[in-house]
Length: 638
Image (cartoon, rainbow, N blue to C red; front, side):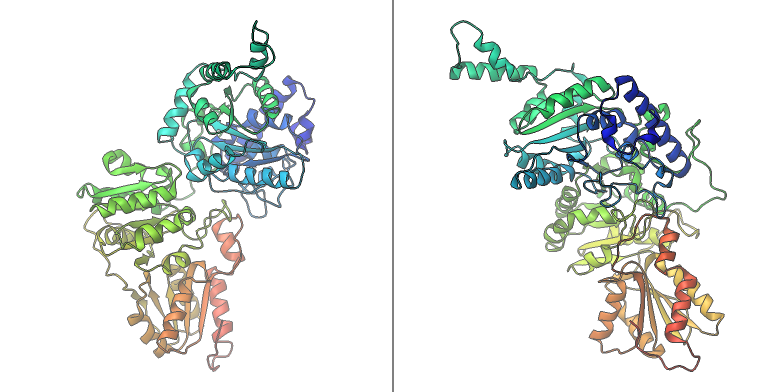
């Protein structure tokens, strides 16, 4: 059977082992060809091909529910659920999403782009099923990296307390998240992986006891304890721990042996209550280059499939913001042992792997545990250290209470570095860094800033590290800088709450924040062609806002436009409007940013064009709003 003929996962039922192995081979070929051409997540999906086929061979996906943790490991799932012919559009505008997404397919039972949510969701489905008196299977597939997340452990704790609720958790254990896993749980699982596989002893052990002379139909309390003790001896140490938490444990199972997987899943489905199937897999399985370098090939830009090397850009690009951040922080940390970089399993993504290599004693990876990372930073700050928490904008959302309760209320000096702020592109709604301006600026005792370019980022890193009057946050985008010259040393701090004027003009005041400062300058150039002269401000800070600079110019010029790469509701433009209201400034203001919608996967430029945020589009909108007639009096603009 050709993979393109599989439009429903139930078509796997009845296929021979040889046919299933052929399907696995085709999935890997399609997966590799697609990601090599257009980019995307590679290693996670390659590692779960057999796991997916075996599981679906034992389920009825017209009834049963499957929840994939994170979702970037679910490319084989997509290929088995009717998306083969569209798979070449993966992560492209209007194409197949890079994560699971409710509405894309009836087989995507729960969407997720952040880790550690699957067990909670699947348990919720199982409890709803039981409340309605229905009968279907609920399965959560979670990686060992995601198991470090507190939410996953909370869900395991709850599920283990419900012995009559049927739930299967499949632990995809490949020793990795994006980078190698850290922590006690990871060490625990490694011990099991290195031990010989042990089949779980079924309850027919009791029947075997009953066949012995003198025991009869019932076991004495003493023999019950002997039976349980024998079971414990047969279960690996981690399995014993899982069983103590209320789960029946199967494993570890060879995650690339279809026959063993199918047999185990069939057995596990028969066991009542919570069950955990521990599956040992190899990240990047079937592509030797990805197996060897599992960190780099977690996700890839387009690359040569034969060599594994990336396709070079047509022209050199400026350094990426995360690299400039890492280089600057590492240089500062070499002269200040109080500086400590903290990441939540994103060493390569944030660039902190450079700090790890240069100064390992000043680097901490807490695993997928953002809440812990933030409160850990608070504890260190309380003892005079200078913690730098480098966390993606979208992931810092997960630690919101810790920011308020553990840091800002106590006015502790923690430096938040929010990578991937703004429109991030192909990862879609789960990863867009839209909300950090709004969700941070309403909290007391925090400073919030954003650089217009990579050189200003260097200065803001110095500013953040040296600021000791409370929390401070810096947001910066994914990808390359704008190409301005950089300094190797000698960076100066920026005065807190002070912006700068980049261009002067009497007709219009353009106030840009972060990545939207250069587009504001481009807008000013376009308006100049229409005879309109604009003043352009680089705000630098949204909190505290430089009202001493902005308010007098707004009064003088009388027309204001704000630019931000984030949500409009509660964002930078809202901060400007609030400042005007507080000071009694009545001038028309037009705001550019992301409206109250979710931004789907596409390239950042495609998303900005869809939102009317390209420089020509914004210039045209300003002309229509303020200058439809050259002699037109300004009117209030929403």
